[in-house]
Image 1: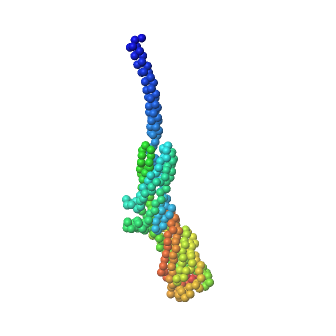
Image 2: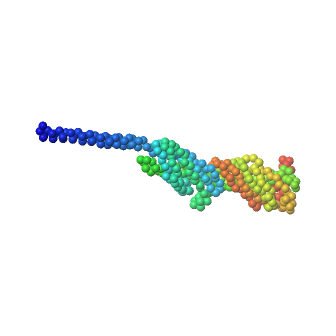
Image 3: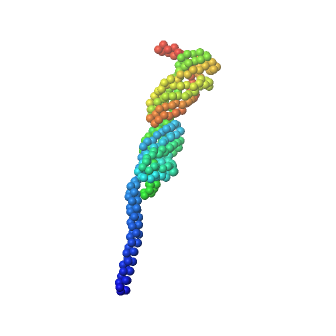
Length: 311
C-alpha cells in the first residue's frame, strides 16, 4: 500500500469520528431548542388578569362620616399566582376629589383563581363641607369610585387594571324635633303615665323610616326619664310627621314647677337623644335635640276627651 492510500484512510476515519462528536452536540442543541419551544408555548398560554367593581357597601353612616367598602373581583387565568403590588383609589363627585388613598402589598391571587378584594374607604363630611361649600347637609350627591390595581404578571410584567363605578351618597342632616303636647293617660303625684306628642321634621332629600328612639326628657330641669317610640313611623323627604312617645314620671319630683304649669305660667322642657332610621342608603343613627321649649297645662277640648294636656 502506498503512502497516499494510507493518508486517505486516516483522513476518512478522522472525519467519521468528528461527525459522531458533532452529532451528539447538535442533538443536545436540538433538545435545548425544543425545550425553549415548549416554554414559549407555555408562555403563549399566559393571559392578562381581569378586575371589576362588583359592589359598593355602606356599612356605617352618620352625621360625621360614611364608611364605604368597595368589592373588587379579580380573576387570574394564569398557571402561577400573581401578586397585587398596589391599589390606588379615588372617590370624586362631579369631577371633584372627595377622598383618595393607596393600599400597598394587597396579597396574591392564586393560579387559575379569583378573589374579591375589599377596599375600605371613609368619607369625612367635615372635610367635604370645608372644601366644597355648595354641598349642603341633607342633600344627595353623585359619586364616582375609581380603582387602579397594579399587578405583576409573568411575561407581561407590571400591569395597571383600571375600573370605576358610580352611585349616590347622602350628606345626612339631623331631624328637627318639637314637643307639641303631653297627653296624660293617668295622673297622680306618685306616678303619672303620659304620651308625648312630638313633631319631627325631615330636612333630608330622602325618606326616613323611624323604628327606634332613645331619648331623655326634662321638664323644669328635672329629668322624667327615657322614652321610646310607641310604633314605627315614616318621615317623607323634606316633610314632617308626628310620633307618640309614652312616658312615666313622678310629678311630686317637680316641686313648685308643677304648680307653675297648673297655673298656666309654663315651664321649660328639653328633649335629647337619637333616632334609629332606615334610609335608601342603609340604617342610620341620627341625633335629635330640643332645648328651651315651654309648656303649660290646660284642659283638652273636643270629642269628649277631658284629659289634661300640657302644650
